[in-house]
Length: 498
Image 1 (cartoon, rainbow, N blue to C red):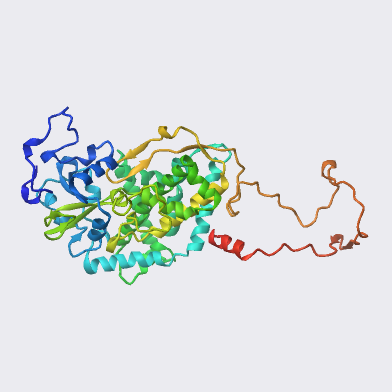
Image 2: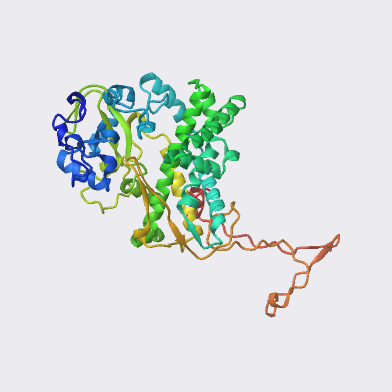
């Protein structure tokens, strides 16, 4: 156990650690729970809530102490009070006292970096201002159009097969394709970018090489925009009055790309899983009682893309949720447990439509600046997918679905589905499950085949004469113009990006 002066609690005996094989598996020094050994983190969070209230002590890998903030109000207070809590891990007592080794599994999440997510004061304003400004000028109508076209391209890859994995073939590709477009590197997008991002975030044996690949691509983009600025996120970062260096531009492109990618992959997969496994939920979508964007918001309450965020650090001795927090203590932003705090959600089955008070995107000075982009990708992408595949069904039993879990998040490994094979569509068309009508020329000269000949009818009026000029038939009366769309149809087409 760590010295009492920075232990999460002032109680506990270091000798109480259970021996191997003891039923108290998952307990560490002082009887504290090891989060990384929990079989069910949601269940553990509720147990900690009962034992300690809205702020509970726990242990990370190597028995490093850490507070877990479980209460909704307490999480909001922590992220919104920069005078008491910050994201600068350089003040973290266990790190300064050598408890957190350089190879600690969570070091990539916690190690301080010169980016807006970890900066404070004027430096935070400078860096965050550039990132926020670079995202503020996005044309969301054009973005939704691009999302739907990219969805069409992805669905065309598997629509004729009648089967697909909507995680590996859809959810993991759509966000990367859209984000590369927004950053200014659509030509650089490839399946290699998806693999590199997955590798980097999973921490596989090739993660270092994959991370290097991403950083090289983003560094090349920053240099290109420095030489020739364009109206995209990279170009706006380069030309912002904050004066970001090439390294700062590259680092923030990395943060934007990877954070948006991982969060949106999880969000899309979570919404699609609920659509496929909850008939009532799907019926609400099909019946129009719940638009897709509300389904996305409900998922952000029930299954946020990130369960927790590493980490906030106490700048001074303070109190939170009835616990004594010492300067230098670390605290996890508990998104998932905060979203189910019984003080704000006594009935977890109640609909949260119209309520955006969840913690999925954090809050305060470090609230996610790209949350509306993630919402748009999930909303427009899922809408277009379901329009192409309205009969899509889960191709396995629900209890056969598998997750890859960590303290930070919970990823659906695959989502196998089946559907009636569909024809490919032009990506510029509005997504639809109906086959596209054959294009007809203005005139057809020739004798129709017998099966194409209509039944003879008595003409109601004498036939219009057809004149010939320069050997070409000329039309008689003008064809009837289609009826104009009503205001509601025009609004729906505008909203969907067409």
